[in-house]
Length: 200
Image (cartoon, rainbow, N blue to C red; front, side):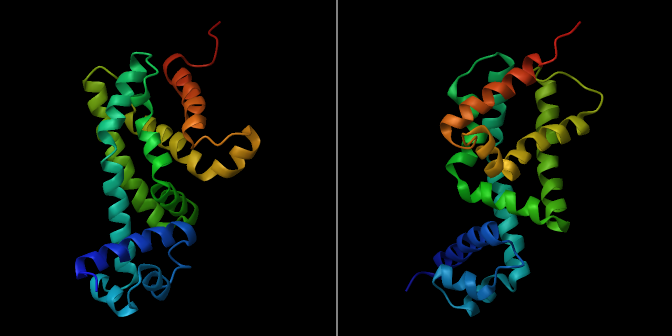
């Protein structure tokens, strides 16, 4: 028999997978228990209810996003220098290498409602703090409206998760693969650092 702590982790892993694939409403405690190889009673013992498990899953995702911050700082510095080094792509590579994270964020955004709002508030807070730090370090240009800038940047990043499948069909390549990401972010870097409108 697996230790209890290991069972709890398996439950949380299964919940993140199923919530990301099907959404919270369509996922059952029995389904999570079956995927984790435990009893429904053990799920409730650890998390109290499906809502409690959903909150724990959301917390795990926010911790994973927070862990990307060092890569985001490296990325911003690389872009500010116009350098195409591999570490400039680390924040997005995290999504490429962790499909569980990408699927979960996509599902939250598609499902909408309070969970989506709560998720965006958390992501917005983290991104806003990072933006202020980058401005203070001279990496990002100052702006009188940091909040709206952060909203634009979050929209650019998260819309890729939502539109990935139809966009892959249109472009004939998947932006969230390593090769596709290089091609995608080359354009992002160009737009962010130099713009795409010719000044008259």
